[in-house]
Image 1 (cartoon, rainbow, N blue to C red):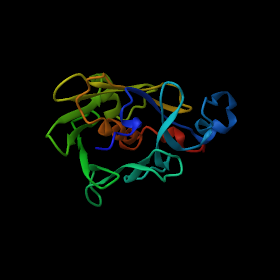
Image 2 (image 1 turned 120 degrees about the vertical axis):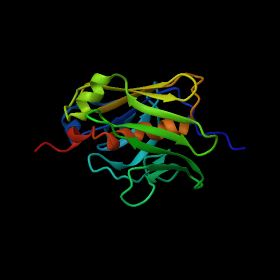
Image 3 (image 1 turned 90 degrees about the vertical axis):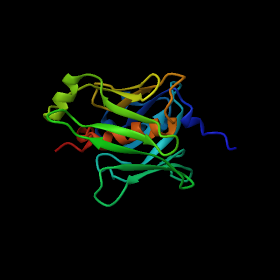
Length: 209
């Protein structure tokens, strides 16, 4: 059996993307020179090493994209794509095409939508939603917040925590999962890289008008 890629074993990591404005902010340079790359979403561990990349760039994000272990897109880890043209349900497959799971939006009155996550095998489910009702209400009403936080809660066991840093440049989403996190960690990584497109959090990544 092939060992899982290290990107799927991380318990803490950061999803980072730079706006075009980062070019005027040299103080934002990180440990890895890739942190200076504009638009691309990257996954870094706590030591600053890059492990995964989303293959399209903010702010023009596609509903279908690839997650690779290299910035040039040669080593495919996962694919994420709508179930059908125009569908909001997102399917996640492995590099070999095997299904892993799906994300399904669950809208509610006034509140921002949450997402149900289903594993393809084993029937385990999870829910990705705002950590508190005030955030869900604010986003549901179209009010922008400098800070967002979500819980990804499996039907069994402890949740993973996703938190967007308040500074607008660069985009930073912190992901923390307990060692015993029950959901397939590949779905956790895909969810973290879906968030910018699903929730419209990258408006500020567009060039200044």
